[in-house]
Amino acid sequence: MEMAPITRIYEEQWRPQLVRAVSPGLTFDEELRTVTRWLRLEPGDRLLDLACGPGLYTRPLAKLVAGDGAKGATGDVIGVDISGPMLKEAVKLAAADGIGNVIYIRADVQNLPFRKRAQFSHATCMAAFHLFPDPTAVTQAVGGLLKKGGAFCLLTTRTSRTPWIRAAERLSSRFSGLRFFDESELDGMFRASGLVPGERKQYGPVVLMIEARAQHARKPAA
Image (cartoon, rainbow, N blue to C red; front, side, top):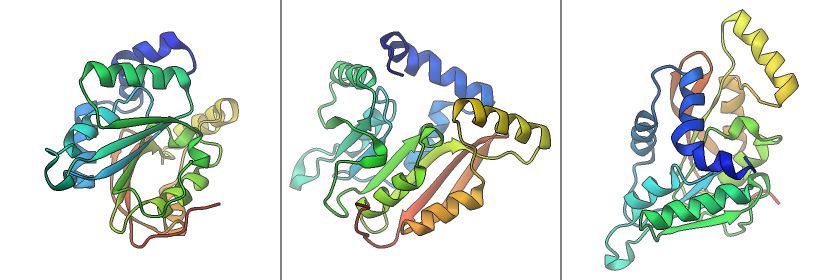
């Protein structure tokens, strides 16, 4: 993801083909419909888009929270990614779409550069959570950054119930670092971070979309 040629094809080719390969029938339109239904967006909301890449989610969510500026109702989306080339592409695409209510920050999502409590209405992390060496650090940080009732939406990989697929998952994890989560493991990570697990949808044997909601503001992890 640090290679400029990949960043240019990521949104239109790389990601759609990869998602299609592991979750037949799942399209980005379906993803976005589900996420926006779970988030219950309103003009003026402030969203955090983790591992945002070239802004695949950042841009459409920014349009939905923009509002008209009346009574301070202009919302925004903060996109965070560790890849400089991805963020360069994100800035270019946002400018091409005329979207001005996005901010991109280069940072490690496991060590987010935010210290103010409860400053985000919602958060998303779509198709990257399984790549983090320490995903618990991410859920703990998000638990402190969300306002009460705010949703954290994930698209990630789950452990299959099919034995031969589970064997392939273990082999993949050993050589690639890709993680496959048991749903009970995710639920436990959420609860330990002050987030209550909620709705979920499974696509194919290994892809899971899930949301959890903040019940109270917590102090972000140090």
